[in-house]
Length: 163
Image (cartoon, rainbow, N blue to C red; front, top):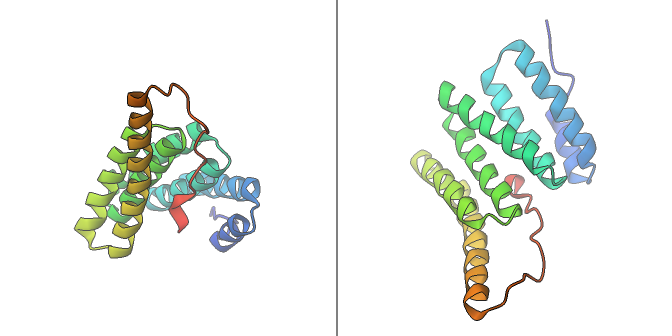
């Protein structure tokens, strides 16, 4: 029997104390174990958590790939809450990369999912995330209209998924 030796509390503890690389490695191990077991629900859940550390470490391609796989797994097994979380994560990745229109699109999908499920706290969190992306999008458009051709700074990862 295969089991994961990666207690989720240890992963959260690593994230809380800033040991993101450690959390990333532990979640990668856990996801591999859940794949081996053949549990799509835990695999999707693990991919959502794995993407958080990837986002903080600015490994955007890894985070996006994990979340896209999570979306497909959640759709196939019908786990709507994790699906909403995966959409939210994809919005966070897009925002961190300055892709604000894509971020708003993904946050909207997350918002629709959590609204259907009645998750008021999640709805509030997604609306806050979406608001940040809309703000950045409007700021970007204002700069274009006013003739400013460069941006002062690149956005930092928001670390949205565990607020």
